[in-house]
Amino acid sequence: MIQSGGIEKILNHLKYKDCVISFCHDDYRKITSGSQKYVLDLQKMMSDRKISCVALITAYNYDAHKIEPKNMIVEVVVDNETVCFLTAWQVASYIGTLITANKINLLSIFINSLFLMNISMIDEIISRINEKHDVPVLHIFHDYYSICRNIFLFYNDEEFCGPAPIGSPCCKTCRHGENRIEHYESINKLFIKHNVTIVSPSENGKRIFLRIFKHLEQSVRVVPHQNVIPLKGITSHNSQSNKRIRVAFLGYPLKNKGWDAWMKINDIPNRSDYEFYHFTVINQSLAGTIFIDTSFHNGANQDTTSRLIEHKIDVVLLWSNWFGNYNYTYYESLEANCFVITYKDSGNIADQVKHFRNGLVLDSEQDLVELFNINNEKLKECIDYYKNTNEQYRIVVNNQLADELLDKRLFLSAEIQSFEEQINNDFEQTIDSLIHGKFELQREVQHLQWELLELQRKLHEYVENYSRLELHSKEVEKIYCENSEYTQMLKSRYEELQAYNQLVVNRLNQLENEGFIKTFLRACYKLFPQNIRLKLRKLLNRL
Image 1: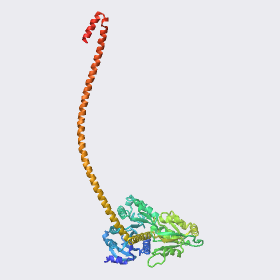
Image 2: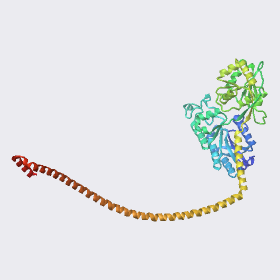
Image 3: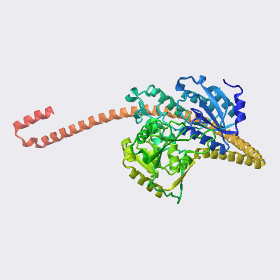
Image 4: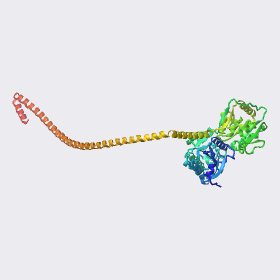
């Protein structure tokens, strides 16, 4: 039943004005697993920095993605205490009201897991909150639900698929492939719309994520859940000679965690050389195996590391057969100085075993069985060598994300305080400066007015001069036209006279030639016989 007075209930249970919102797919206070452990650590690291944590828990429902957001009921948990049950739109409305009224200072929104979550509901709540205040959003990348509804990326629950690209043919034959395209598009839209920062706890997780979300590479950060601190100069001295090897399986009896491999080494003929332990929260152990409760709820005062040390575990089997992006149990084993045996495709576990050199990475279950059944002396030598030569480590929660929020808050507070002090200390000086500035502006305005009048006068002169020049230009143009006509007439007359002169010259040349002939004939006339003279006379008469 939805309770009334939700705003007052939320406000009254907040220990601090500064707060964060954390989306959770189940009740982290009751369920023991990696993502739930992270939420508990998140709560504590925020509380240590005087930041309240508002967890929004939705019903654990395999069909949650099919339910309309308005019909989703959210359990509101403030600083680890259930306050009320609200619809999604009420949550967004109430948080927005508290922000507007300056009752809370919302620093960040964490999406701790998308597993079986209603994406539309998350989008609606964040969208309504961002209408009041733009809040950074981080997705803690615990599993691969953002890539496929199968969080282990197992094709038909049998083998790791890569992951297969969106729209791959193998999705059509996989029991988890239905509506995968729609699933991807809804999450991709959520990431882009709200500029979500993807926080992966390991490089392995980042690599897998970017196989599908290549376009979000700039939005992915690697922030490990824990820090590994070497204890310099501290080593243990141990010998497995004449001693049964104590071997532990950590976690739920699930196939993806390597339960099948665990059962095989429990069936080896020389089982008497070993003591087998199962560290988990529910006693589902094999016969002849010692059950150790690892619950971290209900007042439990021991963590898994302490229990591993207490029971003097030599070897931990972490045979995950999927590319896990973290694994708390590995770091608990490392801190307990246990020798770890893992599968080559166990993701971050295999990466860390190779990095810290605290175990073996095997290629197959056959290699694992042979190691325990046939090569157990080799196993003892490996354990002895590791425990007598390795460094020991202390594992602590990585507070980086909480410290970043604290730094942001301190920076803003210091900035505001500095601004207020400056206003208070320089108030009178600021007023005098403003008055002086006002007079300066008035003088500047007067000067500009004078310049404007002067410009107007010059403009008037320019207009008059332009009018005169325009009139003079018209007269010049008229004279030019008249001169052009006269010039053209003179040119035509010149051409006529030149042609006539050429005729005269030609005639003169002709006459000059004729006169030369006549003069020559007259001079020689008397020298010619009579008959020739007659002919010449006729010729001259023709000329």
